[in-house]
Length: 343
Image 1 (tube, rainbow, N blue to C red):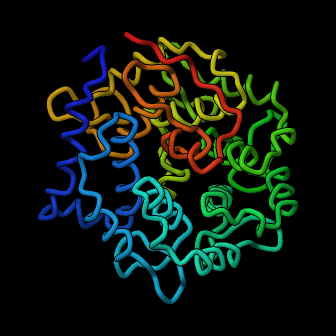
Image 2: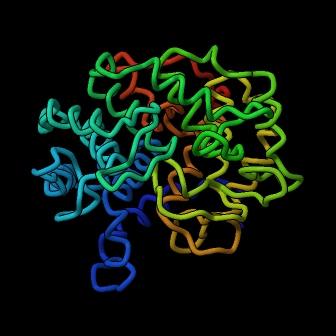
Image 3: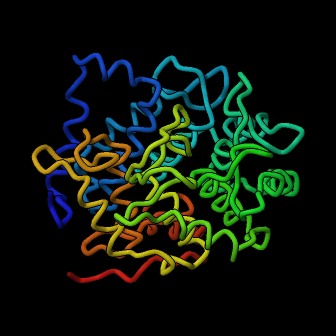
């Protein structure tokens, strides 16, 4: 177990991920490929090693996932377009200064076509709806400079319907509060400049209550802790009911957007994230002792950045991208991270 962030090992771990093309697991995860590229690139940017992966190869891969019929991006070449992979593609191209490769008009048309009469968004043409996809739509339109084309009132009204008595938000109207859904709803409202729709005292109390005695955070009451959670913007595919490192980001990002990061014990959470590192081959796992993956590697590092961990770059919790990139396009909101420590 290490008490410091093993940056060289994590950089090497991410660089090696593309060397496993002969393994079955590589092909079974094709539906997450675009997201994985986004996770890896963002983690490298926050560790200040963006150039560890080849830019041109990455941009070419993203463009190979373009779904010409739909006018958006799939997760892998020849996969159908989806809001999730489309947002990841936009984020990657923006970080790589290649957004000019995108047919913005067609992507905007695709995104807007997925908004339902209720205000919620479907993820793709097959119709699954969730506040995760609403966030993907709002974030993507904002990054493309086309947020003005969204029916903002209808979108905000649906988010309001997902708010519960405890201040949290669910996946759909009537669903229980969950940290992952809290993040997507809070971040969407931040992008739309509508944070006044949140019962901030109740929600910040609920979020601070997610911290457990070992320092980790859970996603809802009576669950265990986790570095992250797999059902949000980054991997809308499965539900993990246990504790993992990724919860660190969902809870921290919402608290950061609301200016309440001091409501949790930062030192205990930092120690929990660092304890989930793989000290031989690199990467961060969902919890100490488990196998690392690039998803939890990003969100562990993202959580450490918001906690002010030394030598990391600032992360924007609204867009989950390097803060400098978001600031350069004039989209920074009023979030607050802990002060960056020097040692």
